[in-house]
Image (cartoon, rainbow, N blue to C red):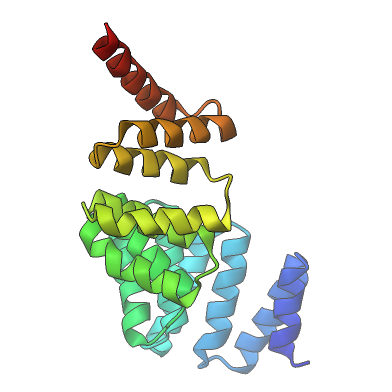
Length: 222
């Protein structure tokens, strides 16, 4: 096991001081290799030392502006700070350079979601789901963004697939209820909202939607 692998293992074991010593040694031995700076930046992110992490990622990019994982690291850093425009810039550069990983596409998509640019988010969330089809969060966020982009017919099977993977997903039931309302299927909507509330009794949106439907049904019966 080389020194870099040892350092990564120490980081996984949360032995951060030992990992830092090894990464520092790697950088001293190979000062022009961006990988050491990127790994040290990743370690500092684990330690919540974002200011120093940024400096290490930026140093890696000074050495190699095509270092996709340095852009990804900076993207993560700015995403954690809710600076979605800067995060978006770095995630996009990472992807454009060739970082074909689900996390990068997902987080890039979510930077658009947080800025309510739902249609722009769609291709990235779709790609994340394609690369990692078993990830429930990727799939749900893709379905939600489809719905928010008014692609209701496309969103419906995505939420249904979420429930195939996890039949206790209250938000998937809630969103299927909203789609049923859009389709003017009141009884179907009520059923979905009730299932959401069985799973999560404090689901405020489902409770409000159920009340509106029952009030409308009661008013029609009067």
